[in-house]
Length: 175
Image 1 (cartoon, rainbow, N blue to C red):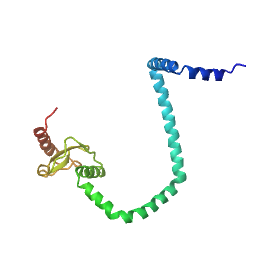
Image 2 (tube, rainbow, N blue to C red):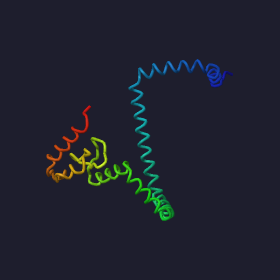
Image 3 (cartoon, one colour):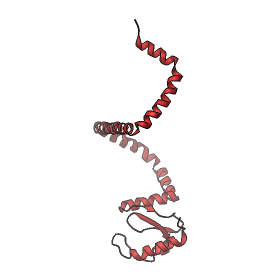
Image 4 (cartoon, helix red, strand yellow):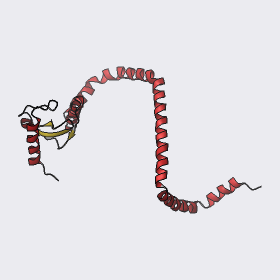
């Protein structure tokens, strides 16, 4: 009796290189002809997987939430006291670096519900001036404090922004 599965397997093993070369050309042509359709199917599969994953994660969290919290609390009770001084020293050291200063500024801006998108680079002796709720220009501290202003109330913003943009234009070339 003829075994089709065994024949197909032996054929594939014997003609592996030919099949690989054919598939390379065939799928390239197929993908170029049916690209949109394939992308739509891929996107649909991805969205279904995302939804399933969200449901799974939520169910897992609900069933394991207390265990996770307890494990975390226990770990911090053991870990933190013995390393408290070291962690504080590392944090203080990091906050002295330019990256740490930038992080602190971002944190303060976020806390105030301001955005923090710098329009120029930080330099020594600079303060970040919010020209609106999102954008910041680094200007010299003396210039920044020369005019009392407030983004929230709008007090003197036109004056300080004019000075900030003038500083920016004088010190940076526009590309």
